Each structure stands twice: as C-alpha cells, then as structure tokens.
Amino acid sequence: MKVLGIDPGLDGAIALVGDGYLSVRDTPTAGELKRRVVVAAELAGVIKAWEPDLAIIERVHAMPKQGVTSSFRFGQALGVLEGVVGALLIPVEYVTPQSWKKFFRLSASKDDARLKAIQTWPRISEELSRKKDADRAEALLIAQYGFNRFCGTSITKSDLSTSSSLFTPQNI
Image 1: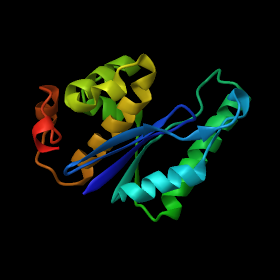
Image 2 (image 1 turned 90 degrees about the vertical axis):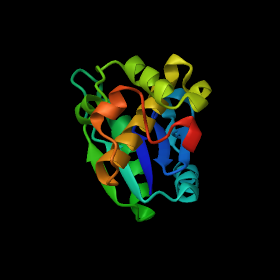
Image 3 (image 1 turned 60 degrees about the horizontal axis):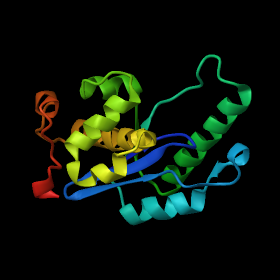
C-alpha cells in the first residue's frame, strides 16, 4: 500500500510512503513570484509515476487577516492539487493539521514537524535540512499519518513517540 501526503499551497509539498516506498518533493510551480502557479501536468506525471493507492490532503482554509489575493492563490493551488488527484482516480481522505500533529505529538511549529521527519527518516535528512523544507516534512508526516490511519498497520501512537516507524532505514 502506498499513500500520498499533500501539504497544499504554492510552497507546499507532496510525499509518498508505504511498504518500501519513501519519496518527497516540492509541489511543482512555475511563473514569477506574484504570478506563480502549480504546474498541473508535472504534478500529474509525478503522482502517476508514484502510483499511490490513497491520497491524504491536509484540510486547510483561508486564514484571518490573509489578503484576498493570497487566499485566492492558495485556493487555486489547492484546487489544482485536488483536480490532479481526482483525475488520476485516487481515493482521497482529508486530515486537519490539528489531527495529524496530535497523532505525532507535535506543536503547531513547522520546525517541530521538520525535526520529527528527520528523526523518523534519517536517510533522507538532507532533503529536510533547511528550515524551508518544513513543507516537505509535513507532507511526509501527513502521508505517514494516512498510512497508519487507513492501511491497517499495527503501529501505535506510542511507537511513533519513541521515533520508531514502519520506515526505518533497515526496511526501506
């Protein structure tokens, strides 16, 4: 079973976890800073090649005091992500940030998520080493949450709090 995790947005990321599978990358975008968009064709190519059985998308919403343009661009990026997943006929589940972060016993800090992902998957720590890699880390953790929640694994929350994981370097 392979699970796709999606941290939405123009600065978001996608990740794949599953039995022997582990991959992460930034959401593909193009354009000038203020006119940047998600590149649907490239995104579809990556997701299709990964062949996920399930997608977990973080349930997000506009933030108070966020500008109209920012909210529109964020929603547009989310719509492209959902459209690509839907067009590829991948079943989707949504998870709130509070739910998956509570599962991993994380605070709201993006850096906590990045450190948890490095701890969980040390073999790809280089891909998570910069502060701006927090979205990659969140996509990985969202995918792992989905794998644990929907794929009938025997791993428990207490297992995760001690940094053990289905995806240790020995079995990837």
